[in-house]
Length: 425
Image (cartoon, rainbow, N blue to C red; front, side):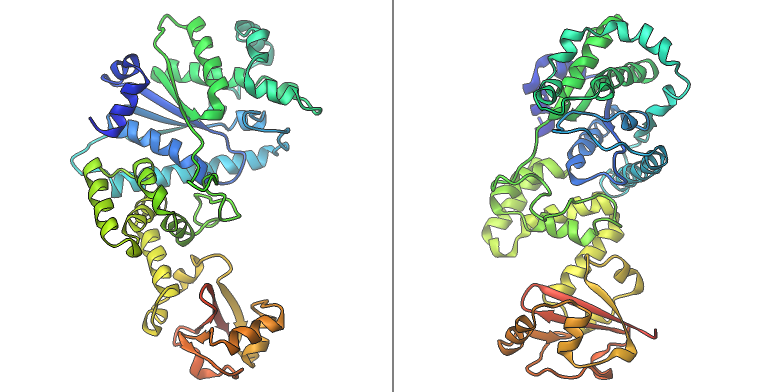
């Protein structure tokens, strides 16, 4: 048995038996932002695993439910999202999902596998022509107040002074109806969601039992993933890790997974990659023989970046890693305009070529290096480099420091890298 099948069998033989024949499995994503984030990735991978085993997988984008606001996992009411923003977010999330699904098919799925595409559905399609009176009179009667009030997401909010608004309270009705629609359209009997979705999933389960004759429905919840340090996935960076390349670069995603501790890497190789048990065992054995090379973290970073950003994104991430950690002037000279557009956050600063000046003023005026004493300390301790060459004086930048592709690399200490892009302006 693979890890996936063993895990499902542990959930109960009924689910294992259910998945022995082709099923439809779905997971929902509300467009409350203009990108999915790293916390959504495990649910996406869950859908992909279902797809790989020959099941029909559906990613449901909540163009309707995002306008209501899911209270699950929230300590306070969500800010209202303008309809125009919801529609834009639906487009962005659909792009995120389609890119990841396409990358999986191109980079991870054997060519011999001839599987139909994962479906992406917007739930606005079954609400936009609904009459609110008809909906409440037909569907609202099937939900009991006691059960709705007993949901942990409701209880936790009602215990707070600000309470919960009625729209949020009804969210579980709409998520249940989503599942019912997917059952009618695709015979969807299994829902995947985060652990905070348990209340909504069980509400849908109860609703389906009242709607249809079938009684074999299942919900799979994904627990909150934390590192051995106790940090939530994606939180150690200080900023959210997005799955959109224009919000979080491929380099940033690669570095995030590359920097995991040895104590976490085996678990994350199992969770976030499609490697077999044998492949993971071999990677870990090679890693143990030379831990300083971080071979396991490298494979983890490569696999996740390849899935999210594709081959081009992975190549860019690895190129920037080489540039920033042990690169050469020859490698710097190969950086293209496209590479600079996908550079790590805040790395590239555009400077008019007419503003060539002494190094200290350049760092303070353009790179915002403060205070001045910090610059002086780095300079005096030999930690300042231009294009990888150590600088011991506050020199004036001239044409000899500008590479043929009009850039200059400045390094302050071991970790602070800056690229100056010289312009004619």
